[in-house]
Image (spheres, rainbow, N blue to C red):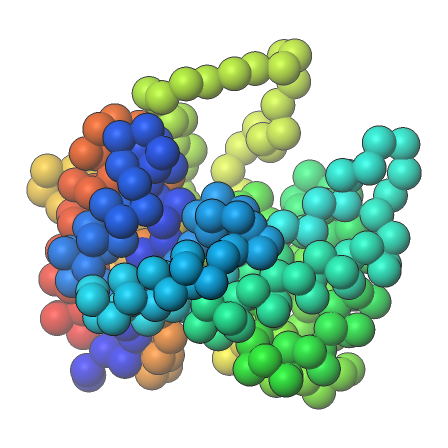
Length: 295
């Protein structure tokens, strides 16, 4: 069976080097060099002059895409519900943030917008503001040809209120401009503790649950029809092209068998080090291509 999915990369992968040893051009050139065709960015991190980049910056952005043969895939944004000290974000403020990023994402050619939402539980249930605010921007998303896709991210699990609420929203509104972004870190079989780079600590607490939630890869079957983008999260590919954290063979079997045709957007979140992201991204793409060839 021929895989229908496409290969992309999130520039988040270069977090340990971007702005330190690598420029935006360096990172984008590396994405193209490893054979990917999709490009995912974080608006606030990668767009100079966010949220109102200059016409010159926008022209340069499209020139890069043309030069390297890349397609904009997913634009990451934030709806920071704890932005204001002592009070919650209002629906109007959340709407303004969503509208701002939808417009910018569309200007830059992106089809998907991932709003990182403020959460109210340890398993990442979003602040209740998400639903009325999202419903109010659906017409703008339709006008701009954008799909809003919140991220299903560890330690959330697929069989959860978080996912049920998102799917209920799709069914209630009948919208085609809201879907799910699946982060493959949901399926990790053990914890990876990042090393390298610069770390900071405030207090001794931890937001991490004591154990890794066990999410059967088969659960992906239940929601794949609603998944519009996959962040192919990974932490470490060893010298034998083995990933001891993410069960790629099982994931790919489902994705290929179901004929899912979106982007697997590689998101490296392992150890920091100069050149490490570039090396690890190549290892992951080699691993996935090798596995896909056997399906």
